[in-house]
Amino acid sequence: MTPAGIERVLFTQEQVAERVREVGAEITEKFRGRDLKLIGVLKGSVFFLTELARAIDLPLKIDFLAISSFGGSTPANAPGMVRIAKDLDDPIEGEDILLVEDIVDTGFTSRYLLQTLAGRGPRSLAICTLLDRSVRRIVQVPVQFRCFEIPDRFVVGCGLDYKQQYRNLGYIAVMNPERA
Ligand code: IMP
Ligand code: MG
Image 1 (tube, rainbow, N blue to C red):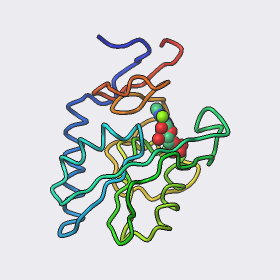
Image 2: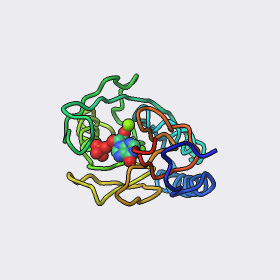
Image 3: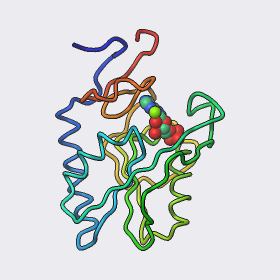
Image 4: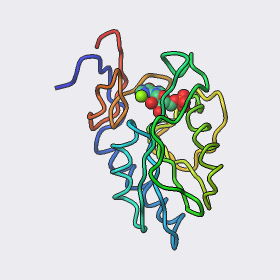
């Protein structure tokens, strides 16, 4: 049954799986001959990261960090106010790092994380995001790998939440909070 508040499905579970396999293959080619560490941003990227990791055919490590935003309740009115709430378990010095995101929206979160991680001396640092809503970008961040570009609507599913719910939907859907 479709949960309340779901307006329309943007990408089905099959479309997501297919696209994640393609991007996994792209990453495998790009980093061939090297080891890779995926860094997931809790909690939104967890579902995407596990699917992506299985689609990458390279020696792989994973680590996680958690961030918290403050200064406002939505990304739009809290520009740039991000801090690390749970840090990585291990150093990243000399390693090839792929930051795995659920969505790059205004870009503030990704820019902050890129700057922070760059300061720890990785060999390389790139971003892979499930969703890119580049029409809302406020600060520029280089996005090397993306599964889908999406329109300017709030979405849930595949790890993305509304009030911590809907993360477990296998598909990505436009959400109308007024009907939730
Ligand atoms: P940014 O810092 O504006 O790029 O925002 C990134 C974060 O905002 C993401 O990691 C999500 O947690 C959250 N976010 C942005 N747009 C959406 C959305 O449409 N649905 C759910 N969460 C979102
Ligand atoms: Mg969120």
